[in-house]
Length: 179
Image (cartoon, rainbow, N blue to C red; front, side, top):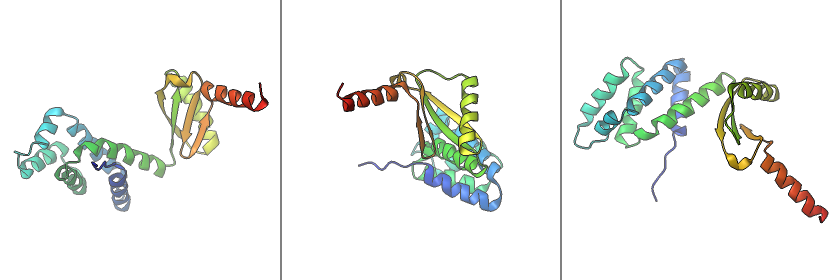
């Protein structure tokens, strides 16, 4: 069975190092830059080519990253040597989540039947902020199967205001009542 690796563990280690050094934003910027570099298909083809020496690949990465924290370069090189460069995007996203949490910002994963405009996202963000006591960023996606309304998850809290859920509740109530 192939081993699937998440960026969460790497992000947590990177965050702890950055926090210890007082360089949270520098690490974020460097991880972003590294993610942008590997998003280039041609660069990725070179970095994954076994015929190209590790030293040459490291030089390509160092040149692309420029002046960044040496430990970031080491981490990216470690990922490259383990064949895990593709999880760098996940590492970056997880790092940003940790950074937001550090600054007291929560994320609400909102699923709606239709795309949410900025005004609705802002309204939801305000309402959720009142509930959790700090700023909330809305990460929205569309799922037509919920029919209408929305489902939101903020940390361990689930708010299900979907029409699908309401219909299921009504169905359950009717079955229990014997109708």
